[in-house]
Amino acid sequence: SLKIMERMLNQNTYDEIAHDYKFWDDKSDSYKEGEGTLLPLWKFWSERARRKHVTALAWNPMYLDLFAVGYGSYDFMKQSSGLICCFSLKNPSHPEYSFSTETGVMCLDFHPNHPSLLAVGCYDGSVMVFDIRSRLNKPIFHSTVK
Image 1 (cartoon, rainbow, N blue to C red):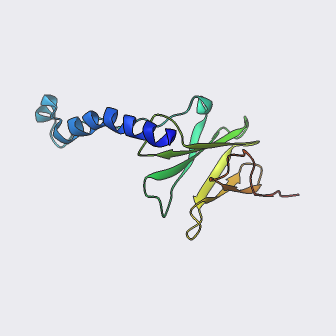
Image 2 (cartoon, rainbow, N blue to C red):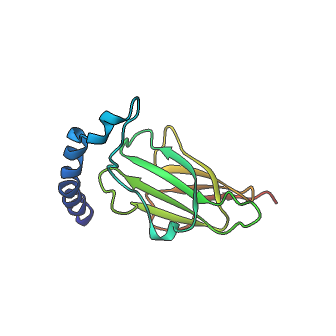
């Protein structure tokens, strides 16, 4: 209910940007042979992901507006906690869901038949499965290398 209202307001806000993108014409493009410029539509970010690298991205196979982003570090000598954010194109202002991990996320993917299940591989070798419908910040399955 509140989430739907927020999505409706955001769609009205971002509607102008989408129309500008469709008809945007940069005069400097005529001077660049074979090159052009892009106007960014959305910027997906979370304050909790500050200073973390995007290490994985996966689109949901059933809900085509939903995608998950895994955050970690490519500096393998300096590992810290990881983060998973699920964003929707319907509401680019903040993540729909987010989950914390003890180590950085290296890969992730949605289950092809159960789109609410998200499998996550972490830097320490552990594998977790999250149910994005759950409001808990805990995986429903956690396997370690030990």
